[in-house]
Image (cartoon, rainbow, N blue to C red; front, side, top):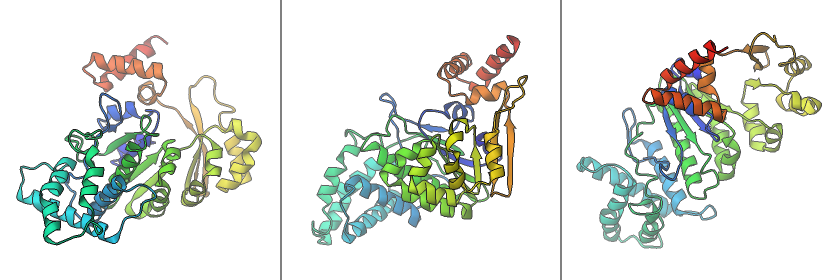
Length: 370
């Protein structure tokens, strides 16, 4: 489905844990954000790319990020601090327009605050009780050059996310990190909302895989609610994937915001739930006929063919079971089996990392050996 959307010109943002989309992302040369010790995850929320602009939403997203880095979850910010940060961001971009040699990033923003903005505050006689700039600079020092997280907000590549059509945020290695995870979730919000509102004439899709369970821990729930209620107004789609029915039932956000606003429901083989399918039926508002169709999935497949069946319901008015059969080449691009993925990467390496050529040769060998 994701591949089909991509080929129709859709802008796709994927949030995942488990590296399911690495092959597909490599194949279409998308942006793949993940964290390793050698190559940590990097962003640059201060950079304004082609087609983007410093509008109110851009300023608000930077402010939200800075406040999240500065204040703890249970710590409220004062109105005066909010105003001071607004002035700092406005002053920083005026400073950049006067000095085109300065690269927009967190480091140059920090330098501007320390070297220019502090003196402005002193001239305006702003009290520490209204905005404690020294505390702000001290708390955000780890994100500045030489600090523990200096890589996080100072990226110099993969910058124009507004125009990039395939972006994967792989959160597996940071989902339990107290600093990186909440920061990255804010950046994901900003990236997709920016696309949703500014990319005209193209469909926008955000697909949140099993990562949504981790995202719910960091206040992402309100964003999910907002997304599902507004995304269609901007020619967009929001999709959530889950493997455990208990997750759907136990999460009030998913149960109310997502299910109530999802006209399209796709179910794979539910054999292991057939004795407690009544819960799912009630939750999804399925008819007895639809229940029978779902429980028939993969029960009478043609043994001569290799395929899986899937149930798709469109608004309850059109419900069918479909056969999903892909070519060997597609299968190799999508597979998440570790041994198969390694084989694909091994063949891609023979052609200087060209995954398409690697898949083509491997698929040809597999067909020949049948």
